[in-house]
Amino acid sequence: MSGTSLDGVDVAMIETDGERVTAFGPSGYRPYAEAERMLLRQALSDAVSMSDRNARPGVLAEAERVVTDAHAEAVEAFLSMHGIARQSVDLIGFHGQTVLHRPADRLTVQIGDGEGLARRLGLPVVYDLRAADVAAGGQGAPLVPVYHRALARGLDRTGPLIVVNIGGVSNITYIDGDDVLIACDTGPGNALLDDFVLKTTGRPFDADGALAAQGRVDEAWVSRALQNSFFSAPPPKSLDRNHFAALSVDDKSPADGAATLTAFTAASIAAIAPLLPKPPRTFIVAGGGARNPTLLSMLRDRAAQASVESADALGWSADAMEAQAFAFLAVRSAKQLPFTFPGTTGIATASSGGVLTGI
Ligand SMILES: Nc1ncnc2c1ncn2[C@@H]1O[C@H](COP(=O)(O)OP(=O)(O)OP(=O)(O)O)[C@@H](O)[C@H]1O
Ligand SMILES: CC(=O)N[C@H]1[C@@H]2OC[C@@H](O2)[C@@H](O)[C@@H]1O[C@H](C)C(=O)O
Image 1 (tube, rainbow, N blue to C red):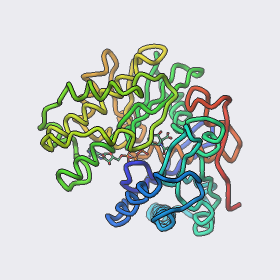
Image 2 (tube, rainbow, N blue to C red; image 1 turned 60 degrees about the vertical axis):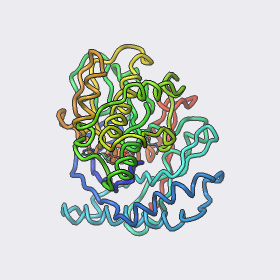
Image 3 (cartoon, protein in one colour; image 1 turned 135 degrees about the vertical axis):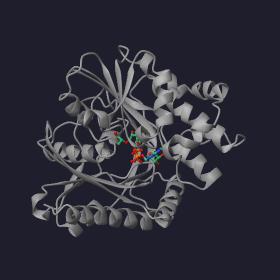
Image 4 (cartoon, helix red, strand yellow; image 1 turned 180 degrees about the vertical axis):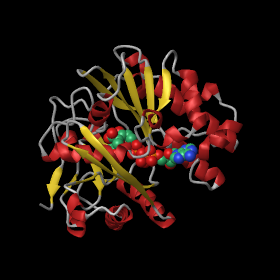
């Protein structure tokens, strides 16, 4: 899995039948080199004008090779580091790199050559997991909720809970027993903050929320930003990474800008609660944002009565969860089990998707 933060490739191994997770294997990470990250950033810009998802304008063809190679290297290093025999792996789930997401135009583009990856690894690969949903009128995201539900089945909790994934964009899954599964993107995650921190300090992200912790939140700015009609729309809804890029805190000091953007992420996650059937009892936080204590504390302040817990504290892996989810989705895809639902992507009927290659 390589997410919208463009930080690197997450690898994880699980044992599953697509319904339940019977064992968690190890997980790993292969960061993008600086040059690779710059190429991917350029690919996001070059993708803006795309209308045909198979076109590869500008640097996209080169970026696609880099994405495929980085994933192959990530898997190879992972297998050798953990002494896992290639033949013991049944299936690889490959998300690719989203370079454009415009579901209203029935367009979502993940670059990455699934067939090339299957050839290089000598293993079957399931890829292109968003396309079928978008083609059928769904949002194509989020896909992870069905995995969150599988994990939540193993928790002994009453009352509705929310799993929040704070990646480049933030998304939530609302689970209330086995029957209610609602999901959507909630707004910014780390991407706006990362971009601002990179521009003002040269560092790729606000490590441990230290910069934001020193700054002052401009609450008026946050309230204004929350006026965007996206926030009052009910789920399902999804976002392109750069949807809020025009919102600028460039007139602020690095610390105040970081504090304000961190608060914007926290406030926009909390703002989903009134749009759900019942107030959530718990927010379980995963994704890179779970490592940012300033963000967690701002979410606690804004989450009303709900408790805020990190996924790691429950024995789930905040870092590996998305990669695990794409392994789970690959198995569901291979078995033709549905993984997008009216309540998660807005698709008319529960559907499967993905392309299986290399068997
Ligand atoms: N120690 C840390 N302190 C603060 N922020 C952190 C820390 N570690 C990671 N992050 C943030 O998490 C981001 C990476 O998050 P994650 O790996 O969930 O993103 P992603 O895989 O791109 O996700 P998605 O696909 O959900 O957008 C980094 O860019 C950074 O902003
Ligand atoms: C189009 C796309 O790649 N969307 C990502 C992005 O990153 C977070 C959020 O926006 C989420 O909707 C989705 O990824 C997660 C893994 C998902 O589909 O569940």
